[in-house]
Length: 289
Image 1: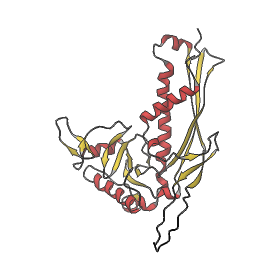
Image 2 (image 1 turned 120 degrees about the vertical axis):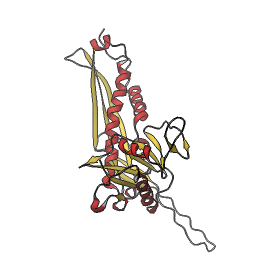
Image 3 (image 1 turned 180 degrees about the vertical axis):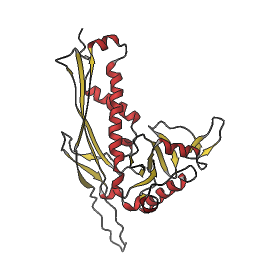
Image 4 (image 1 turned 60 degrees about the vertical axis):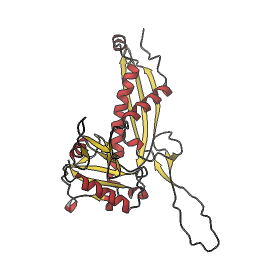
């Protein structure tokens, strides 16, 4: 019987893809995804919601009530990525693994790399005062003995920018994780071996890529940490540093005309932006790669 992926349903498959992506993606849980409007295609515009400020007044017997006016800033969805693969009828017949489920996971991995690379590529938009570098903007040579002081410096620049203490995160590469795992400030010997201390205790966490808590940051590891001209950019921030909007659309299965095979393809419409206020809520360390 010709393979037509009878179990395929675009809505179900999209949900499965998102579920698999959520299991491995670090950044989508760390950014602002509050937006209004519909993503109908490349070039769509959405309105990103950000909270306005509350002002204080002098009390002299009368109270003036401030109108709340959340700011709506525009973001154009200018990035369209697709995935497409085919499963031949012979492969389907000879394979005892559900091809649909198996390749959903593989598609999620490909999408994860695309999304994380895009979100972590926003280091250049960080406010100049929040960029931590060596002399003359040189990359810093990190080691296990100095890594903590630079995390503290990142904490300091965010605090000076009035970024709330709660919800702060950092995304680093595996080599930097290795330095943290050896840093004396965060490691203690246990019967189970050396582990990073999380909130004053040794434990585990199921969040994707979660390493531990350092200097007030929830630290995550990603292989998509940007590397440019021999320097890598470790990033810090909170949820309102980067705004992101995405939609998986046009997921479909089709029979190929020139092959005994079924193809599955889908379109990811997404984009991100660092608004002027968000630029103050991020920080970076330029380190030797």
